[in-house]
View 1 (tube, rainbow, N blue to C red):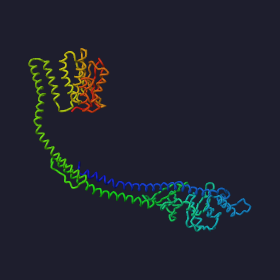
View 2 (view 1 turned 45 degrees about the vertical axis):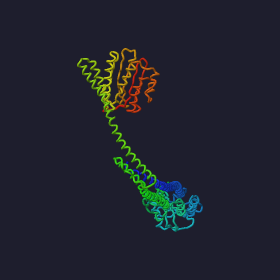
View 3 (view 1 turned 120 degrees about the horizontal axis):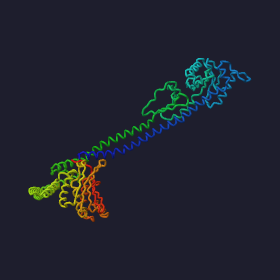
Length: 571
């Protein structure tokens, strides 16, 4: 362990314990501010896209309906189209009066309550008739020509113009409605409306900080703006940023767009800035304080770690200087006592090793016996060869090979081929012991011979099959069959040891299987289960609990022992 890890842990713990609550509090403030800003944006969007848009569209429809009533008087349209005097069917034959009464009817039926003037102009500039509820302004020729030119520039489409310098000496909204006959523009109906009422209708929805409402065409030409100075100009691209909120929605009138922009309340921005500053200051203070305290607290622990390192490299005289009486001081005293105890135990262990050297030499000498037996078997094989006793020579060589195989402790794993050769040596000896009665078949496919298996697992199974299966059987011809199969997809190697001996009843088989699952090799199954239990236990310890021995048996038919092993390449 690095000595500064404890410092880092304490530092992080103190940093989190101080900075985290402040950060959470600041985060709550930030969330509330952000939520308020979002709620304001959503509220403004609803008011603009639904309420204000509907009001402006309704206002435009009323304006268009008012102007469209001119088509209810065919005679007036014909007079404008043919450039003839307007002849009415009334008995008075007073053209001016009849046109005024027509305008009065339009005025009374209109849903607009702020009309201050209506007049009809022919395309040649002649004023055909007019209606003024209050004032009676004089239309100058230049003024009339400018109206006709505006209608022509707009391709004789209904046009709305906002004038702050009007003939009425007050701001007005002017609606220019081209009059057509047989699809051809022949005149112009002009409706003048007070701007104040429309402004009041629109600006009542402008309730946010520095909000601006604008109505523009496709070229961003401003028809209306909260700031009168921007009316009649081209609107700049909408400003963007964290402080400005922009939104727009198309109107029912062709090529017109309602735009709304406002700035986020500076108070909310101030609260958000203060929250960020609080987070930064709290983290900085927590960082400095935690760093100082962590180093101050962990200094004795780091010193203790260094002394422990000295002990690890063999300096058992290393001791900690205890300067406090707190828990760390107590820990230092305990460390010094532990170091003293370790030193005493090491001195005692050295003495004990010297005393046990003689016992170790005796234990080494005891290992000479298997080697002596192995050498004796080799000598007996040579004598049998000299005296021409081939069976004795074969038995001695097989038994010698088995002892050499058993004494080889270099690895816990061997190949299937090596384990099979060991079993083959055993079967040679058994074949001489039970001459003409026990036969064996080793059917090990070449592709599995190089896989690795735990050492000494097949021979105990073969021995168990002979001693407890074939030997007690009345069958005069016993057969041992050893085979194997690899399941590469599942990664499993299965080895089979089958015999045609006595087999087992269902009760005895159940007892043996139960014993294989237990930790005790003794039980009602008898001695035959000890070898099986040991092999199963070794496989479980070496390969894992999912691997082991499975037994299938039928009374008077025989037994099959299946070893389930991992598919492992031999080394």
